[in-house]
Length: 359
Image (cartoon, rainbow, N blue to C red; front, side, top):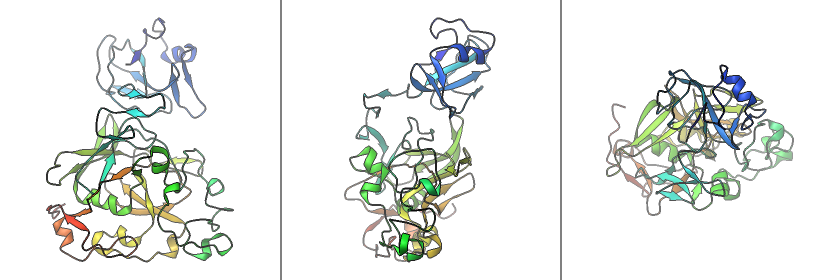
């Protein structure tokens, strides 16, 4: 339910909508520019439609303040501004988790695209598919706003002092190494916060998603992102939307609504970045303080890496029992497959029967 001007607390719509927001005791904004309405985080729209006209989307509106608009809106704007508390399109449990009607695990919705994992419909901390959600440093399990080397959990004293997930003594605190190249469950924020079978996706799983889906750069409720629509037989047409929340690092929020960079559960494997059929299992010292990410924009969908203390979003997954990595026939027929640690995967993959030539 939206709360248009003229309906909030019985107050008539003023000439200056900003003055209305400032004086309304039920509306507030915090130091970071997040708006709240009636105790709930909200999106504030400035409405350009004539008074009395109905609207079902944020078209003809622009946001005021730091929150990004999302979801559908059903209101009779009086002109000026309208307020939509976040999560109105879904019910909320007492614990704050999003309740879905079906296809859920621990109250978080997923989509089965016919792949080795089922993908969450929203980022962690988000109520809608196009919402940015929370930002996390790699291997940390609590969202935060300050992403610097000094605040990173696995640095003893800034760059070059790793205390976990270090395979090169040059970058470990006092020469520390542990050769861990994948997040352990206690450091996987999706597993820790969402429970059940939820976890962070691997580089291979992002690669599988890209190879087995039609990827379209598009907008959802005015926000940029990519829609991944399955091409796996029996699952055609099922899709997920990944927004472009950018990155937070060293006090800056960069590339918002331009780039989507997502953490994976892996260290950066240069071979995975080159594709399924070019895997190189050897860690690279150059990337010892970086972790694997999936990158997307209007022109780009590939694997990469970024410094671990940066804040990126996370899109969780659930393993489907009995399913292995789905490799399109056009890829599987080229060379034997190997996993991120170099193990042979020749007998553990299945073909989707898709031909990706011409993409």
